[in-house]
Length: 596
Image 1 (cartoon, rainbow, N blue to C red):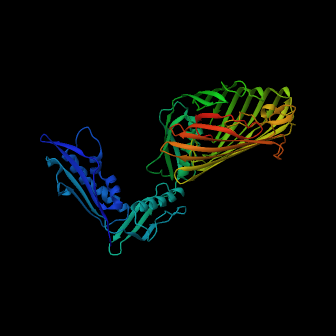
Image 2 (cartoon, rainbow, N blue to C red):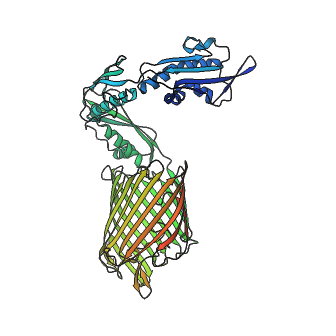
Image 3 (cartoon, helix red, strand yellow):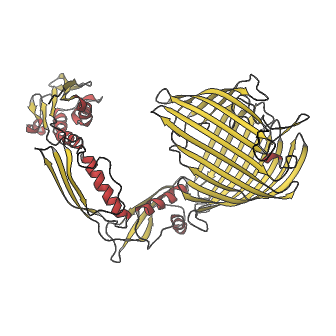
């Protein structure tokens, strides 16, 4: 067998002071080249030499670290399949194991880690019994695979978790026999489990300093006392507490021993977030202008984890897309209303839009609920009363409608602020009934996004949007519910909402159908910096369904992203590529977060 050994000098030098003199403390590793870096990382002695310190380490500290390195290096080698290593740790030429730290008085100049790992062992006969019904196979845990101790631990933990999934909350290892056979370089392992009794969930005890009433905490938790124990239930209850936004933590701890009646009690430690939150935001586009937003939130306004959120925004400051837009809203939401995973809300909103093709003022009152089916899935439904006054190229119109929106959202992105894989989908349909000024109809929309990573630095992001209005004719439809395209949310490089339905005679209003397509290629060029190339396109049609009779426009551009803890800072530059208004203007967009 051919081995390559590599001798590596420590890059760090610790200066020791003894008897008034300074000494250099070096660490040398002699081992097969693939193991050198791992051994240095595991060695306390190497860390001591490499770390900058205000005071030089004492000889007693070096000898103690060297003696601790035996166990650390053995654990490292066992996890890589080496079960017959020879380890020598020499402190100035003497074996560290023979030294007495308390008697050390001389300065240490050299520590040598000399490792002969021997041969790699493979798994031989393996058995973890009894088997649970729901255990997933552990990769690498099979005869002939490299005998890693961590893989054996993972396989054992997976089997225990399988028993816990079946209600055996106190499953544990009862016995284990692990034998390394040096003649054939194999590791045999027999692990015997004690599943324990199948248990049911007992009572939930709530502790901690919370301003939320205990009754409400229990309603939010939705504790299913009496059901068969399931660790997924424990996780679900913890997530219910956290997602309210009211609690900083909601940690559940199982009792050490079950009750005589076969139940297992659980204790919830609940602590609150600060009751109030303030936030501010800003985004700038050379044509869209400056957009400012502010939010005030009270997380527990009535003592039952009710949240009151007041939000305001101003858009179009200094822009060239019309006038200034205003929006002010107040939303009161209450978790666990009528059922555990249903959040009820009441919303009041006043809004003004002053775009180049539309002016509108509206007041909205809405009552509804959000059903949080899973962490990545939610459904909302509501009743919405809306009164609007609009002005466009067809003149002034007032209308009042009662709508019943339904929205389904699926969010399986790996990172909501900066996704590199997964997808996002949101579909909405809102039938509305005319009280005054229009006809009955339905507005629907679809937003699909997907992300695919190539290697470690390249991400392709795609987005598709659809919109449609059915019912009223285009001239009698609610003008502020019609569709436009252009701007940062649809087609960058084109003026904000510049593409509408052209009815002739210089009459341009919103369309009844919309398509938006966007693609971005994001390439990381550094730890925090990325460059982005993108193409956007949009379509607006007069008809309810996309029949090709409408018009398209598009934009292209480049951008940079700088990653921060609150999301990537975005800087995009875009120009028109095609369309009825495909001038040579250039737009700049600055904001926080990816474009989609």
